[in-house]
Amino acid sequence: MRLARHGAAGVERPLISGADGAWRDLRPVIDDLTPATLPAVLGGIDIGALPVVEAPGRFGPPLSGIGKIVCIGLNYRAHAAETGAAVPEEPIVFLKTPDTVVGPDDRVLIPRASAKTDYEVELAVVIGREARYLLDDDAAAACVAGYAISNDVSEREFQLERGGQWDKGKNCETFNPLGPWLLTADEVPDPQALGLRLSVNGEPRQDSNTSDMIFGVHRIIRYLSHFMVLRPGDVINTGTPSGVAMGLPGMPYLREGDVVDVEIDGLGRQRQTFGQA
Image 1 (cartoon, helix red, strand yellow):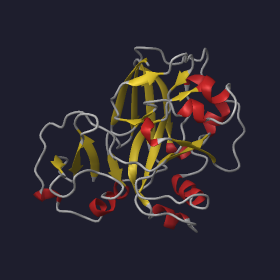
Image 2 (cartoon, one colour; image 1 turned 180 degrees about the vertical axis):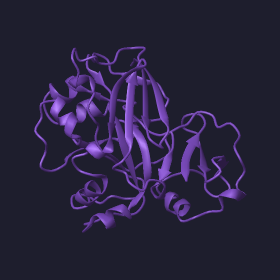
Image 3 (cartoon, one colour; image 1 turned 120 degrees about the vertical axis):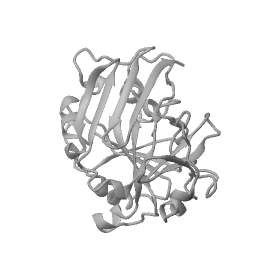
Image 4 (cartoon, one colour; image 1 turned 60 degrees about the vertical axis):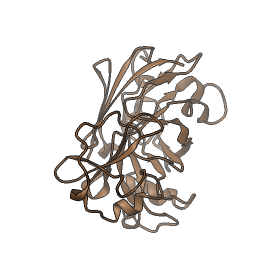
């Protein structure tokens, strides 16, 4: 199944799509896709009985009321190499606030005084059931509701040159486009075999595969569950591959008017235009 939300920002309406590929209105079943309603939808509903939505409007984030966004840094071997960093022995963990989340095609704001706004295509994992002190990867896999595209936008000067932790460069407004839909876990037999791509103004920048992850999806979930409780509706950004502006010759950071296209196999596409805050 694909789960999504469409309509104007703040008043999105829930959608579902099954085997026939048609988008259908979920409002006869739930008011919105939230952490509270997600388990019920995943539990099984009669999709065919729902009314078809012929032309969905703007896609918003596929989930409302996200609890927390847990991010993994330096999680691709080639990305660690391009930044000159050692391969981490344990996952590098940081948090983004849920209010950074916007729709997949919404305008992204370059912070005032920013000179180093960067892009990061990432596989996002949405948690579907509580995860606490998980013992193996099978238990971790059972906690996955589904997968989506995330662009973990970052301001590198704020992140790396202004002291303290990474939070200042990760939590600027609009810095987490998410969607366009959530593809349920049963539709992704191997999350370590997905192609990821990103381009800026039509120029390919990132082209990789989740097989290059240092720590795989299920290992990440199991690891995190020993440091925090993961709950339905939490999101994990699992890291970005090589090709970020910070690692390229000349460091081609984003400027006003740049258009970024983001894609992951089976999870749709994003397109953002970047503008000044």
